[in-house]
Image (cartoon, rainbow, N blue to C red):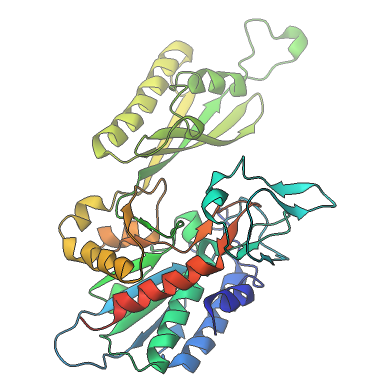
Length: 405
């Protein structure tokens, strides 16, 4: 089976994760378990005799080495859930064959168009077959394309009787809500090092990422009748906006790129007596990352001095850290990926991830884990698309990565 055929099957499964689910609930949504059970069946058909889904909905399986000599056990990892940024149910994919450039009408009835002007990544996709949405949902290439590529590469290796070392495969739940590696069983996985297949553009090889934290600002106000509010009312949302305006205006996602960090106000909720502001904080540099968190706390201290102790409360929780310091100690892991990409005719380009992967957390846990591309674009969006030709190339890369050297 080809990778894109697998992918078209996987997107039928609704696997949106739920960040509001209690942290002791794994997976956060039952749709992920349905897909997990299907993947276990498929893996057993391919030859993963030990394929299984554990109590926390992590899928594991391995293929024993079939070549002599000392070979490392190599892991491949992808995640089953999709982002809640756009609907992930009733996905209606369509293949645009031999894309000729220009805009792609996703949904004429609703006037939903994938515009080249808005998404310049289309400019290098000429002649490719692109899988798109109907504009009402995301596609799920993040990361069902990765799952499809991993299993297709494994199937090709088994059927082609290609010599390989031990191959370890894992599919994780709840990566999109930051829990993908929290209950990962390294011992059960059994790899010496691994690669997440969770990237985008074909030539992107990623081995550094943001340091990340969640920040929750709670503002306590005083509610009175608006007709009698002078010198009495304290409007919590407005007080919270005073805090927000103290953050650097140019250091937001829409004004940054590359290794530039940011503060991102994700959403606000509340009323006069209480308001809650949810932020994420990101920076590739660990010192600047710490400075960002300290800056937010200093702003809170200043405002509490102005309005009274306890008016502002700030809770910051680190999510994950940059994998680069770990991988600098294991350059052979990155070099192996570079060699595999070049063997497939792809010149690797090291790019910093403006986000995180399960691999970032796993690297901190002791499993070096760079990130490989999938050929998917515009993830977390109704304008998501995947290149079939790039998916095929990723399969080639994975096969080169896994074969005996």
